[in-house]
Structures are given as C-alpha cells and as structure tokens.
Image 1: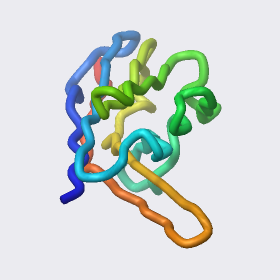
Image 2: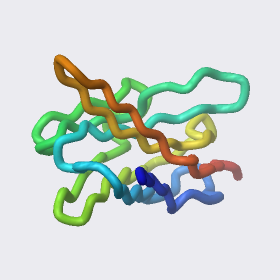
Image 3: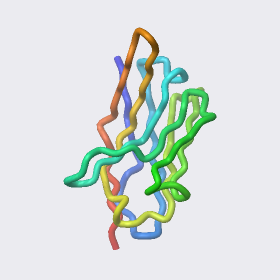
Image 4: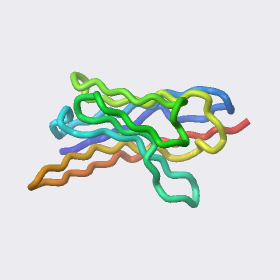
Length: 120
C-alpha cells in the first residue's frame, strides 16, 4: 500500500523558516522523482521544487528559487523542503508527489498535504 505523509507545516511570521518532511512507503522510492507542489486558496496547484531519483538534478520554480531547498534521503525514503525567508505569498497547502514513468508505466502518488501559513 502506497503511503506518502507530509509533516512540518504550521504558522510562521514573514521572514521565518519552516522545514517540511515527507516520508514514503509502499513503492520503490529511490527510482521515483520526488517533488513538492503547493496550492494557494483560489489558485491552481503549482510545482515548487523537484529532485530526480538520484538527487543529482534539482529544479525550483522562480518564485521559490534561492529561498527553498529540496533534498532527499533514499536510505530513509524521505524528501524534505527547507523554506527560508518566507512571505505571505508562500501561504498554501504543500503536497509531496512521487512520480515514475517509463515506456510501459506511469505512477503518480500524492500525499494529503500540509498547511503552511505565513502571517504577521
């Protein structure tokens, strides 16, 4: 059974930091691309950061580049998102995503999300 569980969200003041964690089970974690998406109220879900299976290729959206850092530990089946210099526009539900694709298969798994609220 696939399980993806996020944690670490909460309320933080502008300029503060949070670290989100995602722990996964039920699939071959180290072969999956892992990503953090976010969805603000009234907006579509958007990619914040993504890391390939080996942890060697990382991409950030322009809105978080230079402030967020994604990392993964394939031995522990975890992927983290360190968020610094948070601002009110970062307020959203943050989702962990696991994706694998080859010529025969596409797997796409989501966690339930964790709320991040940035407010004075």
